[in-house]
Length: 213
Image 1 (spheres, rainbow, N blue to C red):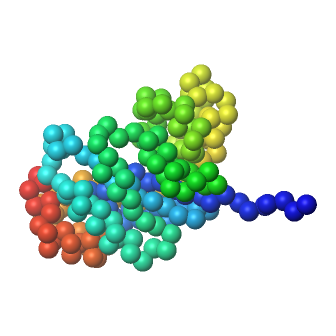
Image 2 (cartoon, rainbow, N blue to C red):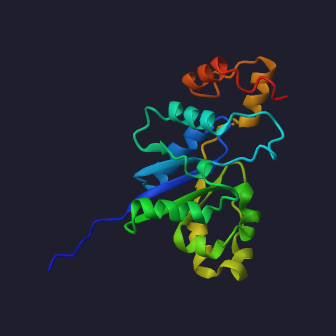
Image 3 (cartoon, helix red, strand yellow):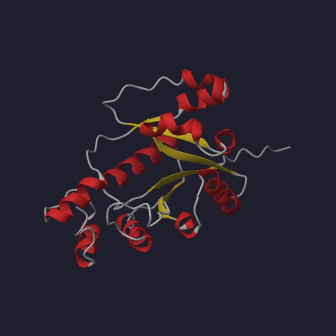
């Protein structure tokens, strides 16, 4: 009798505002794909309530399109509008289950989380179920000390803390932020080294972020 040794498909889920997507996001995505051995990475721009947006930013359709432009040449990257189409509040576990329905049970899901959000993790909606349904990957900048995760032992348990410790990803050192890009655009400064050339053109042609500051 022959055993089915085919491995499960690995899909990385990368959520965020991406306002706008920049070269740092792409560098992290490429590195994470190789580190995990992922078959695919999905950018998931977050829904944003207009009542909570303090600074002028790009609307969902513009953020989606900029991601499409930035990853056009990337074979293992795509973008999903599942969260921007969902009425808030939008929870990570709902997004993971949405993709589970799309891909099936023969897929392993990984969710990229910045290490700066680590302290908030215990307060995530249905976090224990989320940890059972996907693998959380902590993205850590090389200049920062590896976080001590044993403080979460009583909350998550030994097995889940072990999974977190095994899935810490050292980000490429790319000092770029969307906030700085918006500031530069508003000030009329150059952003060509910070975003994909076609994204820079899109921002200029659509007069995005002109009143951001």
